[in-house]
Image 1: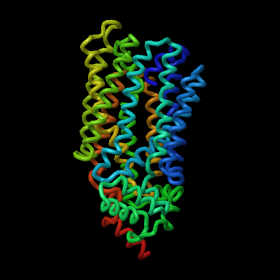
Image 2 (image 1 turned 180 degrees about the horizontal axis):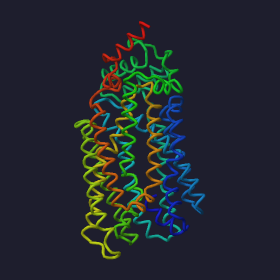
Image 3 (image 1 turned 180 degrees about the vertical axis):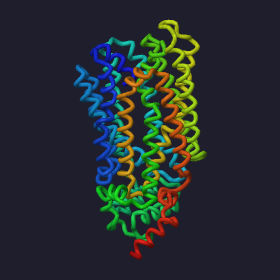
Image 4 (image 1 turned 135 degrees about the vertical axis):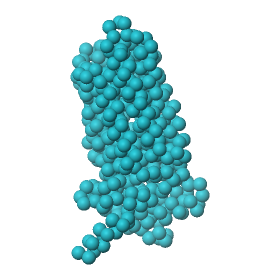
Length: 461
């Protein structure tokens, strides 16, 4: 969409407000999908929810490829938004639930890595498709995603269901079969099954294939009630940490720069469309390479360390962008210093690299692993709702903000926001590297002295 917007604006002669609406409507429509995706995946399973999201992607991409008018584009983008809402919740949940603790960081980061590979392919294809006729080029840009969407539906027919979801349904025999396929040994599979049974509330020594599950009824409204109506202190800490990482992932400003990268570069003095699209390819390369690097570092260095390094680098990069953008914007039109323009482009790439090594992928890994099993799908659903709301706020206001306070002023504002994010990561996020999903409540203080005293007082009452 970043590249297509240049040509859509030219052919359909839409305003900047309509451009922001077209970019932001995706996440507006992702919100209702986020609200039901967690609960739906608890009922029909993780696999079928992924397939449903792919069908939405296919329909939305096909309609946007037709793109005869602005209302048709909005409709197609809205349908694709439902796919986004489902996918952003279920992909990390599914990845976390089939992974062993030693590889969970790597495997759970793969959805974010794949998204960035998709961005890179989009930027590259935009560069070449931009050379086609105005009427044809951007329509092909928007229609191409329908191909991998159908491919994912076909592939999911062959993949396993989440063993943790199967246990939640009382299907212990099916869960054991899956764990034997995805574990390195039979002993590891049995150990993981015991941990899951304990977390769900089933006797760890139970050998039946199908059992009644007491916590099965805690999906739906029960999970939301536990999180928001007098939750235990450790659940409050989990929810605060998970929502916080999603808020700072979006308000850090990287999403706005990525979506409107051609406009940002244009603001610095680059005017040729092919040059603008080529500059965005560098963003895709930077994001993909450093997200890949992050995938290998997550289980070695840890989530918290990567977040601190990432947010610190973003602060410094934003500060550099604010200074040199101000230099360019205060130069006479057509006389912008070449060295300053080059510096801005390079620092944008560095900014994307720092974001991709931590804030981007770790947000999804961390928030998908810290919720207890009974709360995981809907807990992440709450996080993604917050994520999409803040994303909409950023994407639909970014152009208006930098037109009002200048690009340099916008970057300087983001310096303060990202500094606040660094403090949040340092103060509230414990390390989860190498710990099982069933250990997360303990990491966040379950059965700590405070909670034990609360329980004792409640029992005495």
